Amino acid sequence: MFWKSKAHYFNSDENTKIHYKINFSPEDVKNTDTVLVFNYGLVCNVEHFMLQIDYFHEQGFKVLIHDYRCHYESVSTSGVKSCTFTNISNDINSLLESLNITKTIMFGHSMGVNVTLEFSRMYPSKLKGMILISGTVFPPQDVMFDSNIMDISEPLLHQVQEHLGDLYDYIWKNSHKNPVARFFVWKGGFNTSKTKSSFVEYYMKKIGELPSDIFFHLLTEMKNHTIINDLENIDTPSLIIGGDKDKIIPNYLQRILKKYLKHSTLYIVKDGSHVPQVDFPESINERSLSFVRRLV
Image (cartoon, rainbow, N blue to C red):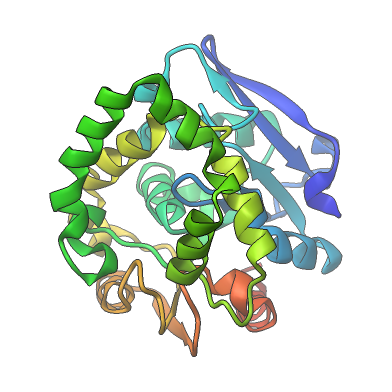
């Protein structure tokens, strides 16, 4: 499986080392080549795209997967606060330049939609297309679960984190061992008839590898993201995907993206959850392949 291939590392600045994997040699990249880049969501990991990564690898496309700074094997001595969409976009751009990549099509899921849109704003000439899955350009605190429950609870959760200290870190690292926690994540974020609970257990185990303060930091980054002001100025062709049973990011947010991104199409997946690419990989892959082939 490609996503478990040899790891590579790139120093994007004097404080940051980015972990990535590719299925090609940089010496073989031509100016006419388009490389597929995958940007995962908030406290997610590349396995959220594993069925797309292997599919497009088998279709003969050049593929790049990576970890954001302060995520998993990517590190930054500048700390979690340096993990901004601007810095992430600069990291990706520097990595692309080091690999001789001048054209990309990016997949973004959830927070990865913010990353992809920010990259489109900063480096439009390097992005031929975007596949945007289950994202929002509004503060997630205002829209998650179609309520303001996150806006109300976030300050309380911050207080709990500060009060518990090391105990909070322990809970963060070991939540995957709690069957009740796993069940609620599975029910809340996935189509349980399509996605196995073992996927959720692995996902939660990977979350425990991240810094315990990164979730709240990135929620704030999403809240303060100003990309909504520039949507109408983005010319990048886009395929917007959402699940009609997404409990986390309501469907109307995908329709807003469709309205303001000029060159976009919308695909709503019947019975799809917040991660329709995991629930229904065949449908997502076929629709994405059709979109990609029109651009390359």
